[in-house]
Amino acid sequence: MKKIYALVFVSAVVAVSFLYFFRNEQLKGIILDASYPVFKMADTVEEFFLSVFKHFQSQSSIIEENRQLEKKIELLKARIIQLKKVEAENKKLKRLLQFTDKYPDYKLKVARIIGYSPDNWRDFVIVDAGSFDGIKKGDLVVANGLLLGQVYQVGAFSSSVILVSDKNFRISARCRKTGEFVFFQGKDRKEGRLMFVKPEQDIRIGDVVETEGFEKVPSGVPIGKIKSVSYVEGNFYKNVTVSLSLNPYSIEYVVIFSGKK
Image (cartoon, rainbow, N blue to C red; front, top):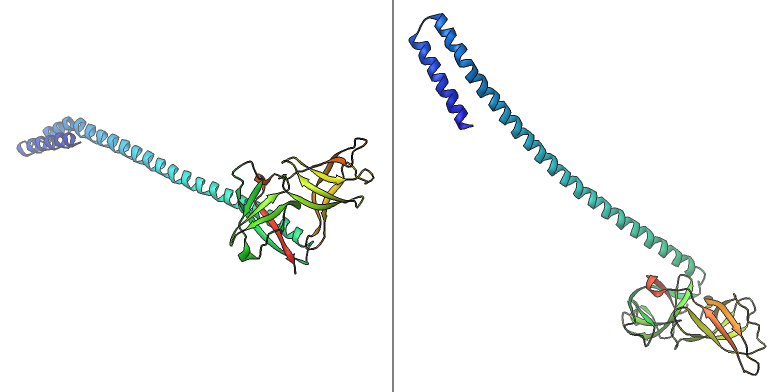
């Protein structure tokens, strides 16, 4: 660019010099006509470089604008995900409230699952509620309207809950349709079993097994459905399996029954 300006300057000096030394109008015209291509070329080159500069400047501005728009889009996506998460959480909490409305006579505490069993010896979860919240050993824990387990260890701010699927979990229960009193024991994640079912007891496949409500235990909380019933002649008891449908890894919130009001 500097070379162009220098060329223009020199041409101008030459033209002015000729005009100064020669007063003839015709000669002046000739000199102007002769210098025109130089001035025109310089002006054209300058316009070209200016247009190229503006083009790249415009491209750079567009690229930067696109980057800013992409950032805004990502922020909006994150916001949408956050709002969907809040909406899903609100739905879960509403279902919990609907469930708790069924038991107005009980002290209920909503807690969040914060940990799981680290081994295969016992099947349990850890919740973020403890003695500071009024939780006691033996309190029943419910999730999604089904019995999840029972509190068996209590800390100040957290508790361990043994799941209904654990083989060490036992609770007295009843069959919803026939009213038969039974004794439920955990077996594995998919099923449990009824213990000490006498041959004459009316146990039906598909019937709901639920808590029977003795002492401080709420009645009518579903545990599972009877999956199979078999009996071998001469045995003291029937073999009864109960299907379980709760997956503790898909549960976030639970309700703890901490006694009657």
